[in-house]
Image (cartoon, rainbow, N blue to C red):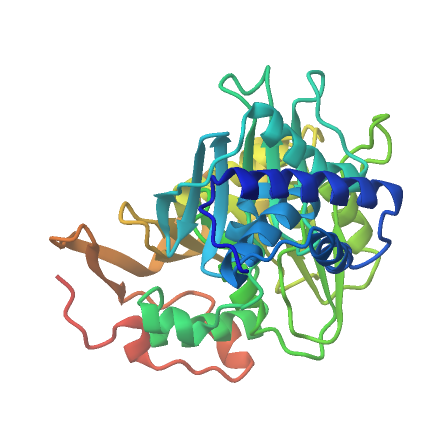
Length: 428
């Protein structure tokens, strides 16, 4: 006879507890070396058969998934990680779990049992990596086997209880055509940016947190010719370059004893000895900024990186501040000149109040007047209003300014038409 008990039925709860305990003991006694979930699922099926109970297929599958998620997955948030439409998972506490889907934050009905349950999941994430989190080390960054980035923070630093933030690694890389289709980019802008990458301009992508900088860096890298040697440097590998000649480097935090750290700056310096045609740094945060600028100024043309900033002008100021963290006692004016000599283009990505992500400006760093960096917008997003549904309305348009580096584009065969830059258009 097939049973169809409700989720809180005593028989089902007793069965869940028995199977969980028996499988946990089996996993502890004979830990699988590979395919943990597959092996655990086979063992669970055997244990279930021994009980002689027969649940309906739906209830059985739900029960098995819950047990496997708790023992070899990440507990109640595992289904969220398995959902390809979800880009981020945020655990604010045992009873508060949010996701991001299609640029919208959504509260879920997912719950943990208590703070201890959240802590067990954090430990499951970081233990295989040789990391730890405790009162003395309450924060940790990690990477799941699928490449997703995880940050966890616990008391006393997290006042209201342990918290987990997971930015999922999306396997389906976006394309330029998709950005054009969604209005994040115009065909003219795409043509212009392809020319800039092929012509080996040095490019900075700026924007606030979670605005889409790394995603766009990944897209932009697709324009790099396949015969060039590319070295990428990241805190956690996210870039998915399709070229054949790619060397991927990843920084490493110190181990439990405080040793073994490999910083982004260490990797930038090492990369310069690896004969790269292009150097791509996932994000500059501190003193590696100066090393990156010097690399751009000494033959490593066509390099790219991202920086947290609220505008193109702010991006330049941030680069100045971070270059000073190299502690080389360079005067500000010398650093500013390095920036102007090194970088030709700042692409600013923004996340609007409606959750949409788009390029808000493409700006040329054109030179200096006295001790001030001069910048000119080539393309800009003009907001015209807000729809009844709260969507930002506006247009991406050229400003009518042709960049000073146009001759560099023409040398590699890109004679861009005047209409791309707004020639013959009446701007108001």
